[in-house]
Length: 435
Image (cartoon, rainbow, N blue to C red):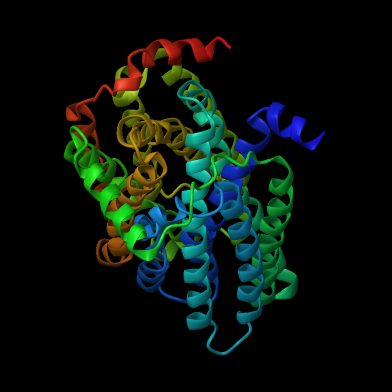
């Protein structure tokens, strides 16, 4: 019965939860930690720098990605990393009452980041190897949607819970409970995925350390020999240039007092904005973009997707300049930005899958591409706190709008490469929408 279930189970039953599990620890490290440290008294520049620094494993993951090609199955690594992540979040929660909580929690966040980056390699490899190109296009909207449902669940529902608990239990106890919830959810997902995930192709054999280095070197060489690869790298790095600067500062801007140029929202109000307004907008944008791109083809859709991705960042300049007090107006602005974010992010994911990953080492090359994507996100993110402190929120968000220009330019100029097995890619994409 179990074998039949595994063979016939619709990918929607595991693609959705797999990418929810992929997004959860990333958002915890990259965004939720920002609000937690803000509530616990750290400065904006300190928060932006250190919460970006501990996220380096997502950029460095190609260094150990090829090794995963040699052992076990993708399913094995997915389940193991989800379980380890759950336990580590539990330990993190226990460090928060300690006097040196900042350094202890940073170390545990760094461990979570390394573990999660390993999970990403295995999860993305499973998705690429198990699903056909047509299925990849069909489910990419759901993939992006549930990755970011994890985002709105984390910085929406859980942040709201933290805000409410702060009033009754205090800041430290509130965030202990929230970090514990992160851990519990990951543990439950690891048990669920033991039953529903396809195993994927097993490693052919366990090689020696010398063979592992040889495999890694071959992965590197074949990656940089791809046609138009430098155009592709430039596209991947610059597509999120503006987002990288905005993403750390937006929740700090929403949380900061009006005397400091912020909007003075409470932690629970920020949770409502992300979890209620942002959630529906992002999911809708992601799913519509998947079908939109499947119908028109990536090449014909990419610049439109870039416009949806970048233009909505202007709403934060509007909010910083006008400082509206109406909660509905603030929420509407976030809806506009989140819908565009969800719609436009699909373009980057599909570009990496269809233009960068194809070839001998799909999983490893896709890991290279996502690492470069994170590099393009992290470098501007690390300096965003210093820029925001220096410029002030109004000027900073005007700068973010200007910083969208490189994304538009590279999207307009990047060439597309037709792969040998992609002669009928556009027809497959169009067919997938009708199935």
